[in-house]
Length: 542
Image (cartoon, rainbow, N blue to C red):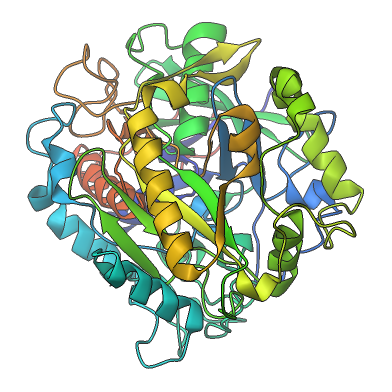
């Protein structure tokens, strides 16, 4: 006989921005909350640094389905993606950057009436206050920031020192144990081992747990099914492999764009427990116009491993397609490896093999890490390789057309999209901006090697697939974040975004999550009515 279900007021799937925000707001309202997170919990000092230990680095890579690493790297048919696995979700490995997008983003008719920069402003402020965002201190000497600002100004672009969720000189937030202020070592996107990032496990999630919310790490949800007035969530213990279920009248799916869409597609198309999910599910995926490049052989030492990964952006939203440009850098060890790889076009003999190599990357990348190939600089540096202290990465984030299609292929999520063809104007403009910066830096420019060989981008900003909309034929969730035709089932993460944001998207994802959380809490009404215990239920959590 299987164990009886636990019953909760709300089950939240995922602990990134959407999940953590909803967990806190529900807990503040006195609701019992279960948060299911597929990844493990990290404390300061526990983030992986040895890339040869691939099980600690990567999530579920081929032939290692039990691996529970920090990075979920996938190579889909049309695009490469990176996401996080861990308590705190993407906040563990993002660049901490929080600012409002260009208001014109909301002029796109795919956004429903009533959601725009003005209506989201109270939620933007709420997020900024909770995360304690502020720019890198203006008075500190930081060569990589100075050269970026001067170059942007010389090119007639407005440089902007972005607010960041970082404790620069004094730890902020309720959870301070084991944390230190920012050490200026450019490891933001590797998981901060000093606890300097104001990631969600130190604020929203910590406060939710203090109010009674229960966070269960290493729990993988397989599907959701209706059960009378409840939803039953099916999940398993990743370590012990035990299968479990729990029930709630409200379920908030916030597993990140890839996780949320895959979960809902499985529920509709494989398990067939949610057969009436809208046909638009999986449509309109966006990689947020991410495009990566580099500058090598800069004419001066820019100390790339100082400060946070990113300090400043330059705006290119004066005309369409718009974007922003940043110059992220990492710690010294990583920059030395990247610098040794060099630049330049891939060998001509690899071009005919590109389709096969792309499919092989899920196997080749772990082998490269395990072998130590990417743990130290190459003995024979690539073309245009130069000193690491005279290198920077470039990162353009733009308004792509959001026309990717997410679906299940052989039971796993895949994304079809001829990105390069449908976004050629955006890529051309981004590459020209990068060449202009490289010229001013006195260095050489090249796009990321994966683009040069495969003509596919690699994105860290997955959006769309569960669009927020005025009607089911236009999206998956209504303007409250509730799935059309499914009372009590909500989505609150990047998957609800109906267009590219054209800049760092996390502030808008978080603001929308705050807005949705407000609606989820309000859906209970003013009178609290405990859920009745089902037959055989031994525990009722109220």
